[in-house]
Image (cartoon, rainbow, N blue to C red; front, side):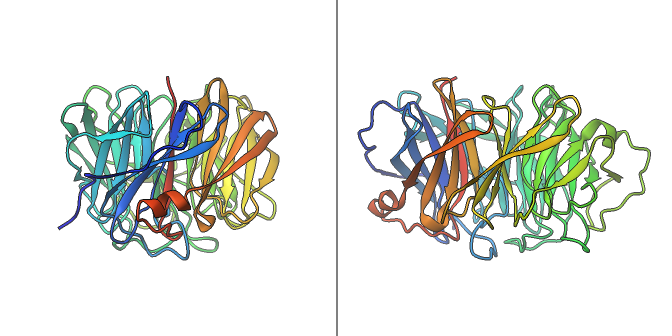
Length: 414
């Protein structure tokens, strides 16, 4: 009864020189979900590529952000992975390096083994894939990818999180957000939002990962958000420190969570107040702490630049991108600078490394654009383009629905 991502609708790429990379997002319409490709030029600017379509479905979102999540579409090497929420499936495509706007589907979409898939995490050492389901039957499920046959479920790799939700999910409070592997690839993580104070804070679910089998531990530990935090959202990792993760938190700004210290906590009786299937619940310990961004509205999505060494947080409530640095020794963060995006409501974001330079691509669906920043140096991000994708979608017979459009992933040559 559900359509698969098989129908290709091709649109010629504008002549703007050879493609140095690509950026991808999803329309996630009520009747169809299209992966949209754009070409990245050497100067970081975008032109339209093509759209690839199938079945989509939006959650009960209040105006935008239909998944309440980060990474519903991801790139791993020359593979693009995307969720199809309405059909409870995920799809895989291969990238054509000489023209990365051209995607080829590999195999058929496969069941996400849960309700309403919203995020995909990939282990960088083994390339094992875990999808996060955010509906009534929520949890994670593991897959392997074969370049000839596509996605295959990993045996005994489905785990429930057990948060009370609906399909589609209602939120943002008490929704799930992202599946993510720790920097050393030893742990699979999932962020789960709670409710803003005085409600129950959310948590980070942590499973141990077995690289030889691809299977995660039977049970997970829930690390409760640090004091002041409530809605753990998008992950990034600190380079050179695999035991620490950086998360946005729209309840306060962001938080640093010390995985090693928290998992070693002897306090096994902590509670988030949010019911789940966690085997144990522990407080965020060690260097873990939540940090406020002054006058923030809802910092949600995160991205990291290897060139600047800094994190970038998207606040759609203020249409602002915040640049944050974290001292690798003390784990103390500093708000470096903020960048206004005008009328665009900044959502999903990703960094692409193009010809030795980093560029930040930020989805702004309320104005049908992708905002492009050149990350030139520490504290020096320049807004270089507001790329409108509306005409490209219209040419493909698609409506740029600001409520549904989600995701941002980038590809660049290795």
